[in-house]
Image: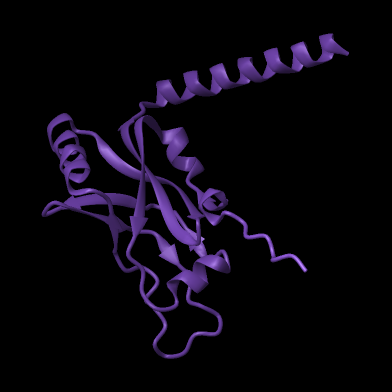
Amino acid sequence: MTAPVKRDQSEEIRILATNRKALHEFDILEKHEVGVALRGTEVKAFRENGFQFRDSYVEFRNGELFLSGASVAPYSHGNRMNHSEERQRKLLMHKKDILKLGAKVTEKGLTLIPLKAYFKGGRVKFEIGLARGRKSHDKRQAIKARDIEKDVRRELGTRRR
């Protein structure tokens, strides 16, 4: 009889949500992976896909990062000790990296926004981005470039057949 094969969970990534609106409204300069401090039933609510990025952002306060505006729906089988939906959640990252990001945000007028939420090795992780806001004409140019790229890929695909 052979022993059951263990899967390496550190490589498994299951995406929970992406912030597509942020990718349209901002130019992403850097991306960073951060952990998040959660309470009680929040992880179970994440597993039920009860998470939304709507109007969320990352705040730099007193040498720490906080996720604000993100909504985690209450856990369906939770009781009166269920978590509050709109609370601020502390993001976990090495102190020196937090201070570097904080310096960039305060000096250069950049902002930190959440881009993606996912499970990695059984833990909830976020991908945050250091971003600069786009003007409306920049958004139009980005849409135009994306459409041209899509047309080129389509043409190359038809020529190969």
